[in-house]
Amino acid sequence: MDLKANKKILIYGDIMLDKYFTGNVSRISPEAPVPIVKVNNEHMTLGGSANVANNIAKLGNSPILLGFIGKDKNGKDLVSLTENEGVKLESLTMTNPTITKIRVIGGHQQITRLDFEESLKIDTSLFGLLEEKLSKLVNNDISVFIISDYLKGSCTTESCQLIIKKCKENSIPVIVDPKGNDWNKYNGSYMITPNLKELEQVSGTTIINSDEEIKKYALPLLNKFNIEYLLVTRSEKGMILISREHTINFPTEAKEVYDVSGAGDTVIATVSLGIALGMKIEDAVKMANIAAGIVVSKFGTTPVYKDELLTAMNDISTKLLNRKELIRIIDNEKKKSKKIVFTNGCFDILHKGHLSYLREASKLGDILVLGLNSDASVKRLKGFDRPINNEQDRAEVLSFLDFIDYITIFDEDTPYELIKSISPDILVKGGDYKAEDVVGREFSGKVEIIQFVDGYSTTNVISKMSPTR
Image (cartoon, rainbow, N blue to C red; front, side, top):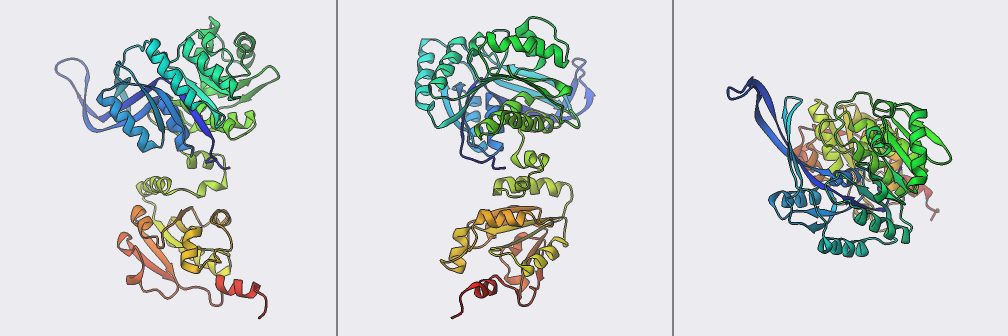
């Protein structure tokens, strides 16, 4: 599955900055009966609608985030974070401080949360700026528009209806993560994704978490608010997709629930990406359900990464990663004390010699990483008439080999920078190389030379395929 297809997704809503101070608790304060947290780490993540955008970015897309931020330090930090995380920010400046939430964590327990926020009032001037931005951004290039409402003031009836109107003019589906009991502002959207509590709020009653009860209260909302789908998240019971034609249940995919922070953001991000990619609505929801099962097993506001999702979906293409993804995964594998083996090559026409070489390399450690020369790199090394097979085809064929764990394509003439970035335990080269001549050897723990099988080479294969001269 190609989650990286160039589909533009635009997100509008309440942008937040999440800060975490983590440490250990060993005593109670003498000043008051509260635990003392000795802080040993602090970090920031994107929150609110920005977390929705971050989820989409980590799934391989390039989202556009639209919303209000302050002119304070937290606003500057948020701008830097979006750049680092691959989110294109179209910001609107407000006089309010940037919405910021600070969580203090002792061990694995949240001790307290500090909220810094003021309710946003969108006056005529700010609305004009928003309308101007939307006029530039909303066009036929946008595949899906997400409204992420946290009731902080960005998502008013006027702003939401402006978005829905402009999207309808361009045939763009609008998907809403709602808050509160006023859904009139979402009238005309394509899909709304409430949890059970949010469904209760708009229905004005307590709802039992059963199929029939949810369907009873959800179905009337489709007509009342002129929407096509309701996707209700049901905690331990998974999700239920409701339309006028049918109701489909999706049992939970979570193996262990650790933290539900940001789970709703992951759901709307993943289902929106699926719709943008042209998936059937049922398949998009199934993918979102799997993603939700991953994210609730993590701590804090954390996105789901493409490789995690594809692995959970048993998709073979999860082996092919970009360099940033590969570095993150290899760092995690090293923390598990896994021995990392690296080798590289063109692997233009796969033959017995390649298979023997790669199998032997895999036996040297726990994880085999293959650096694959890009098409441009192969041309520079082998000549203009090479490669015979393009880089994506070569990568896909190699992905079916069980003894290769990860593949990444590099464009340089040598894998020097790639080896430097992952620092493998064992660097493998084939043929009659001497260890001291192998590129990148200084970044690996050990160099191993594996002899090629006699009589097998891509050049020989191509020669046999050529007409007799």
